[in-house]
Image (cartoon, rainbow, N blue to C red; front, side, top):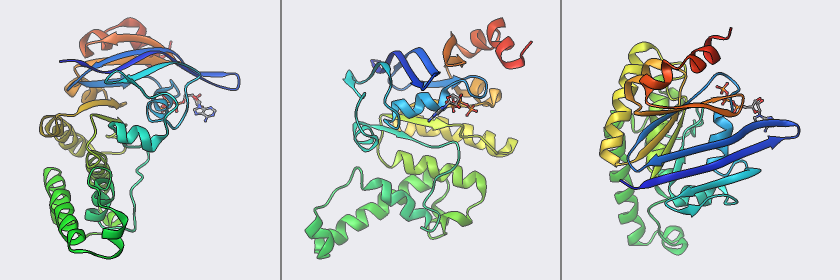
Length: 253
Ligand SMILES: Nc1ncnc2c1ncn2[C@@H]1O[C@H](COP(=O)(O)OP(=O)(O)OP(=O)(O)O)[C@@H](O)[C@H]1O
């Protein structure tokens, strides 16, 4: 398995605040890796740099050997990086199916004339997209909600739909920002199974931020720990979660 993501000496300053400093990560194709750390450690900021929301002040980000630094979020999505957010960001007034179809436009294209004039190929592409979107929804057991307004889904299913939508862009790397936030233990368990399933079905590499240590140690094979913007530890969950430095960072003194 080759390296998919290589992050070297990544850093960003906001005025006087060094939010991330000297972050190094090497993530192999097909891996399922966790990025953990106490509140305010810089995890979401790291995601924002990986997805082009923030431009790093220092360091390099290579996806498949290609630099992502300086690219816009839409370009980075085209390169194969998709994400979900800590606070769910669905198109709430659209149906579940349409939420996924919007993302499919990233991978299935037709020209403007075909679309405006509703030429025959427009309908066949639309049908193709409906089928593809339903296929993705089925994996998440959301196909029966296809016509439901996204805002009417229960919370746990909205989180799943956000992941489904991210996957519809056909990413190489999927970034999940606290996917289990606000979920009850049953929903979290279901989510863990879903994450493992999509990794196999979509052959996608996953990097996730998560505070739920049961989820992290249950499914991640490798962890990076941030604390006050710097890398505190990295290794297997067993190594990292038994590391006195990590325990101290989480529990305080
Ligand atoms: N745009 C910004 N301007 C100024 N400071 C920022 C900005 N974005 C993040 N920060 C600061 O950077 C630090 C890291 O924040 P970040 O949200 O990345 O932490 P986190 O590890 O994701 O925390 P949590 O687990 O609470 O979500 C915080 O001190 C935060 O206030």
